[in-house]
Amino acid sequence: MAKVKASFKNSQGESLSGLLETPDSETKAYALFAHCFTCSKDIAAASRITRALANKGIAVLRFDFTGLGNSDGDFANTNFSSNISDLIQAANYLIDNYAAPVMIIGHSLGGAAVLAAAHAIPSLKAVVTIGAPSTGHHVEHLFSHAKEEIVNNDEALVELAGRQFKIKKQFVEDINTYNDTTHIGQLNKALLVLHSPIDETVSIDEAAKIYSAAKHPKSFISLDKADHLLSRREDSEYVASIISSWAARYLEITVVNHEASSGTAPIIESGHVLVTEQNKEFTRKIYTQDHQIIADEPLSANGSNLGPNPYELLLAALGACTSMTMRMYATRKKLSLDNIEVTMKHDHIHAEDCSDCDAKTGLVDKIEKTIKLEGNLTDAERQRILEIADMCPVHKTLHNEIQIKTQLA
Image 1 (cartoon, one colour):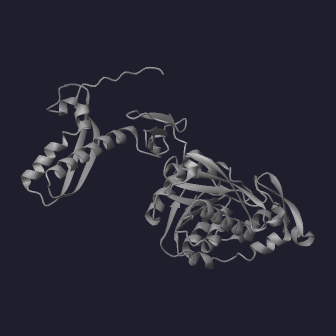
Image 2 (cartoon, one colour; image 1 turned 90 degrees about the horizontal axis):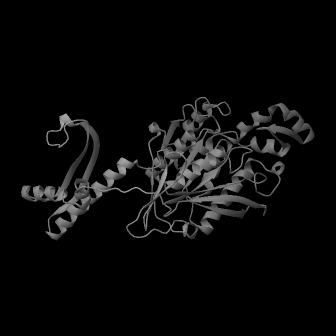
Image 3 (cartoon, one colour; image 1 turned 180 degrees about the horizontal axis):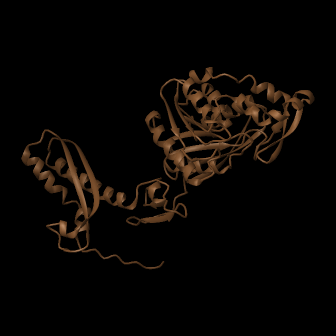
């Protein structure tokens, strides 16, 4: 994937720093990500989630709110309202330079901010909150011990997440105006609420408030053993997997080409395939001359589940070749074949259970192809197409004697 630096102005004309994670090839949709209170765009959960979504074709812009990370401005002069304004400006940046965002994701207080900002971004079709409070007012508990000092002296230094921040009276007054959930019921967008039942920073009761206030379509996913910051890699990657799968139901995915992804893929000769490491686990990038895909293992096998596993890719190759071969035959013979479905299954069976196998001991690989043909076909035509299915080149390759030569580059 490509990382593109982004810079845009907030409503006060100050420069905000962002990073756009884009897929290697085609972008299906654009999204915005809002980080947690006093965090930055580079927090591990934000980077892992946006990176995983980019692997699934969704480009995500994450940025530092005013006064945080690499963005200009003074945090002490910001408030929940300015966070909402920053999100709207970020959406405008995508509109002006790429395409309008169709999804917005918010983590912790960022989740409360996206719920409040969503109504002002008409292009949005989906809203996602992760460990989020229902309103901006919830954050007050983080500095309740200093509230009297803030009110009396107009400001106070407060320690948040191990760092000191100046909180001004205007901040407290601002969040007090965000203390009901009426706006959530007026979203008119699909909503996904993700929250951990053991979240010690934002109680899961807040997720219940969000869910109760929202109208359908809405969904809730429990993050089980995850902590508030999704500090474990497997938790943040699981969140990304859930978001992308859920979003596909509600987003009208179109292919958007942009210059940011050009030139990022290696040059591959025709007929060659390059496989590179996406991480030090099981995620792999696969390049052909014109295409890129991801291979992985499921979470149950300690993978990240960002793509099909190698055996699934093998079955996909055989299934695709089978379907293409049948279609070519039907077209050439002008048969009334409306649709083809090929279902593939791989298994290991004991040789003694296979009556037509050469091997008599040990395990044998067994691949089953189940073919569904739709159309006005005679029984004889269906039987002939079934025979043609086993004539596809990949099928023949798997049956031929194969030489595999392995060498160091």
